[in-house]
Image 1 (tube, rainbow, N blue to C red):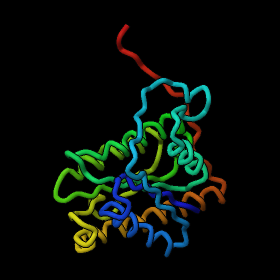
Image 2 (image 1 turned 60 degrees about the horizontal axis):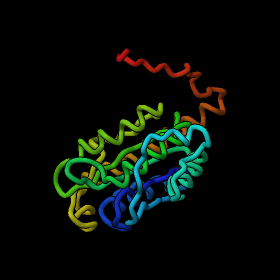
Image 3 (image 1 turned 45 degrees about the vertical axis):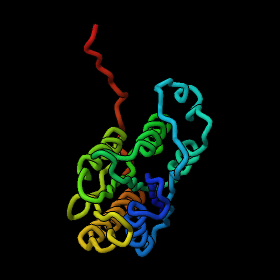
Image 4 (image 1 turned 90 degrees about the horizontal axis):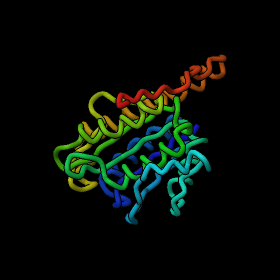
Length: 207
């Protein structure tokens, strides 16, 4: 079983990475494979709702980051998306990335658990986690929690490590994620499959 962790910061080994690394450490102790994917510092273009991915099965824009991730996501068992806080919301690069990944490859995420993690110097974390959680709920994903809101505080990795409560919360995410994916796997072994879903209904109120 494998968990993909996405670092939505342009800082490869900053505060967000420090939080994800703490989660990954617990997952590895639980016998799960992990991979931390950094979105890096290059611009990531946003989704324009062109719908071309519906026809061809992948995002048509030139960068391979999104399409490669969706391919990995189809084989993964769970996800953790981490973000720094910018003006009380997730990083723009992560939102652009997730918009395109979930729009073009939503089936890769369905029924697989997801956790959102926010890192901030001081505030804006709850609003950021709320935004990321909405990707999970629209994709039929179980949402992984801990023993408090999924966040860490600090202006540097060293300060984040001093946030003892935040680090404990990250370890709790790892423990709960490992438990959830193992339960899902045990259910499959016992013959309990994913729910049978109805065809999606879209109601438009403007006539």
